[in-house]
Image (cartoon, rainbow over all chains, first blue to last red; front, side):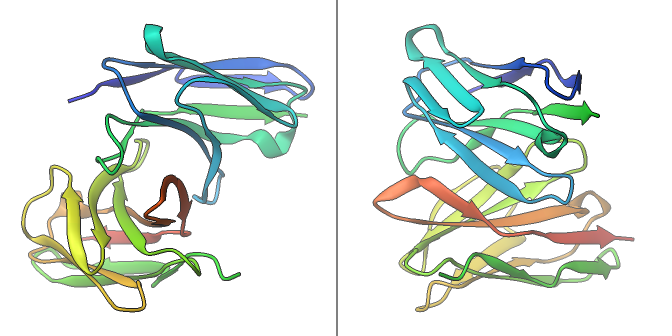
Length: 109
Length: 113
């Protein structure tokens, strides 16, 4: 099956700093999403981005499908950005969703 | 618009017992997926239900089973509980036409002793 890797596994940032999270996947995929899981366990869908670039406020994401990676950019980080960021892929629509191991982000004041 | 809800929030069971977890999907959604998230790991896909039938399954044994009801709510049943079943169980709903727009519930934390 598809393997999903995320880096770095852990990240500590000072409030206001920028960061880039990476997701590599081992095979072509039809769907790719980024999620944020807050410290209370709630998973929030950030981006659906099988290819191209999207932006939503301080967050943006880029997927280069031909090279099998996606990047999540967080600018001007805030303490509320803390939590775990997951990349999840599907090889085809309606297939099982495969999550990566996540990047744990801590933003300190 | 009502979001995805799950019950109970927390549950403690003994090895060998059976458990039923419940999920109410978001209004307008007709597809429900269940995930198991062990501590420190990403969620793992258990199965998905659409039109009251299982529509895809991950690498979980048959003692993990589910149901979807006509109102699109769903149950996850686990028989013969094992210690390794201790995890956060997440339910996500979506509409069949937009499978990538999944909305997750808050989860049920299951502890097996």
